[in-house]
Image (cartoon, rainbow, N blue to C red):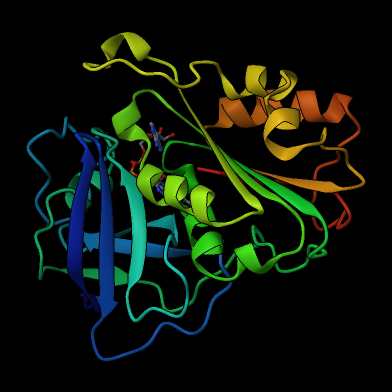
Length: 267
Ligand SMILES: Cc1cc2nc3c(=O)[nH]c(=O)nc-3n(C[C@H](O)[C@H](O)[C@H](O)COP(=O)(O)OP(=O)(O)OC[C@H]3O[C@@H](n4cnc5c(N)ncnc54)[C@H](O)[C@@H]3O)c2cc1C
């Protein structure tokens, strides 16, 4: 049976179905990684599932290590690795992760990977980091690393169902007040459920993009020549934004088109 190689050192319940979890390698170090990369987490099928979980679709042998990819939310200078995870109640791994207690063990792959990083983008270019839900995780790693030292402007647009699902909003609001080149624009889609009201945006990200919010916050309308766009999270938002951006001349970045301006990480 594969040995679990990390300890859970912090658990923050962000909302009923979202947790921030920190893990610390047990006697080894995760090699340096680029902000925005992801790593695999895993637990054995014999691990218990949280009380909210529903029946799972597959049956696994008890010693099977169930592994999934998770974006790192912490900067690589820390001696822990942080994740922001949504519970998929019928899922294989997340109900087991949501039953972990402080000090429990979890498996983490020994190498982070992925091309969803700022490392090859000219530091004079602006970057707009767009996320739904836990898709904000890789942006936290970028902002907690050296993204704010870039010369171009940086904006985070974060969409979620409710205000309590907007993980990291305090940190992002604080950053906005401290850094001249950073702005933060949260939006929620279920304002009727807010017990004390919501004064912010309630539109879908696609509608925000078409509006003048960007000009107001950034002072210019983003164009392919001056701005790279990152999209992370819900595939529907990503598809919607890809169409809108494509019509404005933005191209998807990939191995065949390394000069593309749209960077995508689908969860
Ligand atoms: C590169 C990469 C980075 C990722 N980073 C993160 C991250 O930082 N945080 C995070 O929470 N997830 C992240 N994911 C998703 C993660 O890998 C798992 O897919 C997710 O946690 C579900 O795992 P599971 O085993 O519980 O469910 P599974 O048994 O794998 O899936 C059950 C079903 O749920 C659907 N599903 C998957 N994710 C969701 C969701 N969020 N909401 C609703 N339905 C869903 C799947 O399409 C599938 O049909 C990332 C995925 C990739 C590819």
